[in-house]
Image 1 (tube, rainbow, N blue to C red):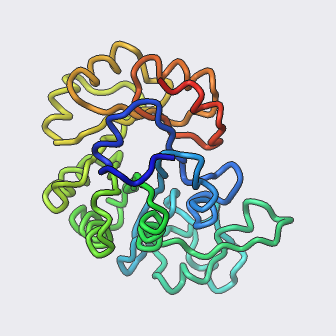
Image 2: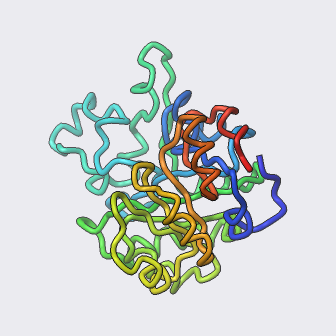
Image 3: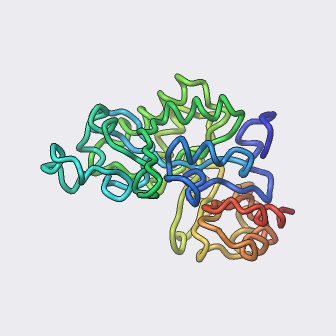
Length: 267
């Protein structure tokens, strides 16, 4: 684990780093405080996903809907809220759900809602770094509202130097730079990137490029690194593939397993 002695912008320009994808999600329910806790000492930084409740609270959740990772379908009073979109529930309603039992029904382990505020407090308490991926909420809220809510939590907790913001919705990254100009941002891509990639990233004012494993290639990585961009690849659970990517010059990988063998090949 990287000790707290630098800003995220300095950290992300190193190589051979491993990020805990949604926390330690192979051994704990994803995007919960338990997952974050179990990632301590096993990663260089944590990655989480955030969205907004109906009343604008920033919560940690990957999916647009609640059914996969909560017990929402088991609560009679919520039956009329199908398909259980996150943005159709207020913070009080979300706080009534269990975010852990789905992971292991036999464990009896229940997990409370994790908010962005609590996640940021956690990384400060444990001298860690965090990549906050802002999920696309454009079907529910205006871009400025989403980014503004996230930015407020970061500012209120004083976590600016420990955070990297990323999103597939690149409009969020433009908005973020207007408010949090000292917080690094990363453009997320899946599949082949658009033409004129370097010009596009420069226009976005991002510091990093995150891409799926299938779309990562040595030529592109070399071009991006030479242009001054950090490169992250998701989701890597194979030590062999980690070795190949680090040899290409990839700065960091996102992993579910947090296997020590992944770090073995850091250059």
